[in-house]
Length: 549
Image 1 (cartoon, rainbow, N blue to C red):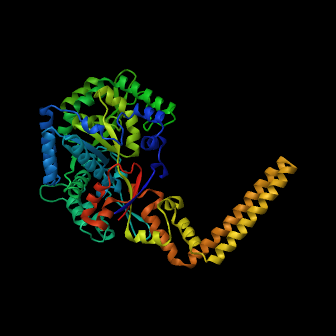
Image 2 (image 1 turned 120 degrees about the horizontal axis):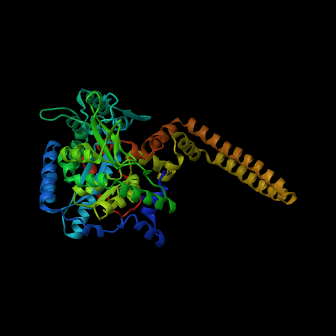
Image 3 (image 1 turned 135 degrees about the horizontal axis):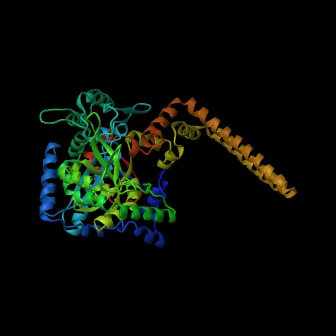
């Protein structure tokens, strides 16, 4: 597998904060970033600093993980890693919102990075490190979760299970798939051409003896199977044993709400003064918690807790005192859950985390979460960037080589129509290219002389001439594009090839890793793909990798 490396700043939609985090070389910029990110993401000091947990905590953690992992069909390597956690190993953790059929490719990239970093940390420090994947199952945005995107012949197709939740804001992970999975599985199998991964999907998303398939268990089983050889430990922390282990964090979030709010507001202002953005808008009265309570029809709903001026709390229409919420925490800790800023802190109170593997948005969150870490845990976990990658299939690589198309040119083109124009321009006969070039060069030469003369007569005349000259140059470029488009349409195969390239590399103007499902690549490249991703998940390339399969 060949690889190319591109700076992260070449990718569209990259925030200034993440750009500097990944690429800062100026000393003052690096020092400023260290205020928010204490660990250097491209050095291995963090491998020597994993926290030590009491034996009793480790026993409870390992027991809960073992019980859950056995239900998820974990293999011997994952169960062995759980015993390493019991015995004192540190964890390298990553996570992702539950996504239908495993979600987009970035899910696999995160898992591969956690595995690689755990291996590297073990080798460097001599202390065992275990990769853990935290399933974010407590979200309540079902429409966002119940979708998966797979390439068809000419477009990206979107599949759904259309699980009915009657409009309730229920935690999505626990929703049973039931009989709705059959149509979705059949749709996916056809697009995946009945590859072996389809058997894994059926096993994960279909009820069978002793197993009820949910959105969470389906993704958990799939990831456990995909990374069975590497021993990835998959964890759904929504269950009571894990919430009980992290209850101390939830308690402080209730009791120290004023202090946490003030620290977050100051950190947000600090980021904005430095020219960055605050990923999460923090305002007076917000809290870091959600509460699961029974709705009027008896269906559990997850509602944001809001703080009231009198010191009380409100979730939906009901008000609570701090004492009432603490009673719920003691009796039913799973009913309280953290928001995006508190979640990594709770995670690292449960797990002996040496480093967290995050994507661009998570790393931006972390600049704010760091103050919550310090206030609750008294330490800040190292956060490292996940592997960012585009996978180039052999058929796409052949088209790109034939037409001398580079990866960045696909990002610049954005659409299949624009790529068709570019391929058409390359395919145009030499005589036509010469005529257009000659006309364009002659126009530029004559316009430059004319503009100089007009400006010498009058500045206003020069400005007016400049506007007219821009219009003439626009029309010249329009002629070039018309000729290229005609060439592309005349050679109909160019349009098909341009569509194939853009559908693969930059589908619907999204990075491939953010849209196309990881199972698509597992179907195409088989059980060897996960290990190949692990091999490329080091930090030799701190930017974006293009991997030629």
